[in-house]
Image 1 (cartoon, helix red, strand yellow):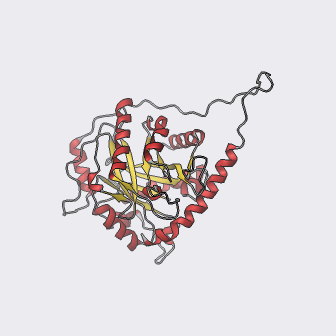
Image 2 (spheres, one colour):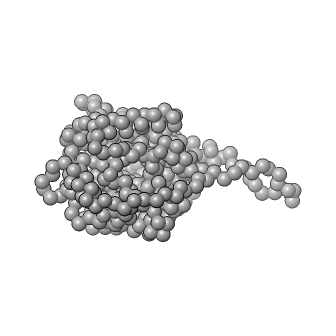
Image 3 (spheres, helix red, strand yellow):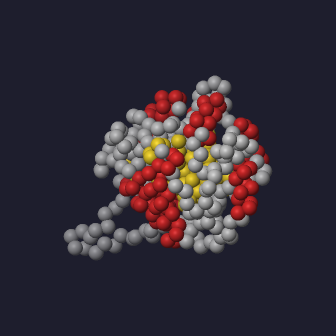
Length: 354
């Protein structure tokens, strides 16, 4: 997408600089717990910043209702692309297509990475509730599931200790995101930007969170720099093999811990961001969403959704809205839920605000 290709590196560098500084400062306050000169350590230990996993039972999926909702999502498409044929029915507890997910994206420690961290938590959650109500008004037949989409692994403008140009959020910060989501009766997405690392190395680091039934996954090809280019210099890429690795890994987690299906978000706004999409494998344990991630005026976003989401059917679709960037150029207008419901085939079932 032209606008995003021009501007994303500047925004990225500013945002990651702020986040890197914030996390570095928070890390500098950690005290050394070792004894000094053989003396007993009498420092009062703080309790671990952990969260517990709720135990929930799930009703079986109504296949007839599922088929009806998938047909409705196609919004009258007659090409045969939508709904996607031969997709597996999900396991019990599936969220899609029974609810539309409306998510706020960003990092709680960075105001420049999205609405999630731009506002104080209470104010942010109130705004999220307002957007959820707006979507339910635009599409009364589809309840809204609110969500926080937290960037847990952030591509960085700095090499870091391992030279991977990635800033991994500490457990304490991720735990705070888990608790905040639960307080808001929201689900949580952990988003991964691998930088010069790779998804095979980064995904397993977060397994303690994938074990939680209310934690889902997002990956961003934009910051997967397979040729060694530093993040922010060009747009990265994933292949279907990378997507299949994540799906397979999460499928095994779902089976092992008897979880409901994981929603799996893949961001996309160019052709090369995802190669060989037709080789993506689907699983009952995974609900895969191709999310239109580009910003710009309505006509540009419409073209991106048509070219890279509609024409490359996988399973579900998503749509990203930028409170600021979508209004940079004429007509200086961010699309409304009513406009999206009217204009797009298929209807996106995942909506993300940045």
